Amino acid sequence: MSTLTITLLIIGFILFVLLGHKLLHACEAANGADWGRRWLNRLDGLNRILCRRFHRLNHDALNLPASGGALVASNHVSGLDPLLLLAASPRPLRFLIAREQYDRWWLRWLLRAVGCIPVERTRNPRAALYAAREALERGEVVALFPHGRIHLDHHPPTPLKRGIVLLARMTGAPILPVRVEGVRAQGMTVAAVFIPSRARIQGFAPLRCEGQSVEDCLEKLWDILAAPQARAGHENPHRTRRSHHRQEPD
Image (cartoon, rainbow, N blue to C red; front, side, top):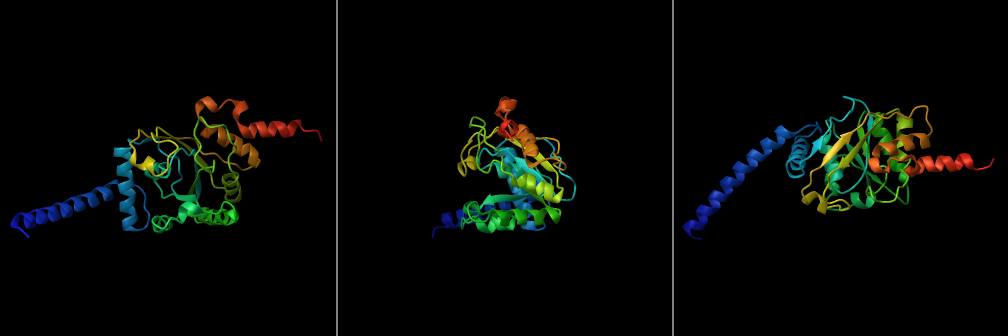
């Protein structure tokens, strides 16, 4: 091995150490939620750097309570959405995630570490509901995409899943609706993380479902999460469904 090669290797190693040390400090400085483990807090900081600098994230202050259980409900436009929500949150978020996504071997260790709750869509979805309920009762924040899958603004209106309202009614936890906008790679999953965006998260006032039917609360949540041009009353599938029920003969 030549002297030049050895010198380049030494310089490369020194740069790696210096840059790695600086990166760790930058991640610690950017950390905005306490995950209870130092490496997870650093990862939280790294994600916030990625979202703010690469995806130009701009977000409202999320109206999460300082402590106690709460639900975050968001529209779902891409695989980048969970990272954006984590970067905007002052508290750790536990996401409900489809079992087929959770079981990817190269991601499962991380999803388990950050407390994701796998949902069995076809076999036993109630297990995820119970796990989310326990998390809320322990004072954690659970995040869901009530559409159940990626749903873009130009897609036909679809009803929201009932799980989030059932959880709110069972635990008394408030629902914090948020809307993700400005993602460039809408409709994509993994690719959306690597395509720069001008992302924005808009927060809304907490929604409480006590004293309301499940359908009434879903109707209000749908109106909040929908794009402004889709908020006309006739397009809300929950309002339409309630109208049909009222018109049915006894």
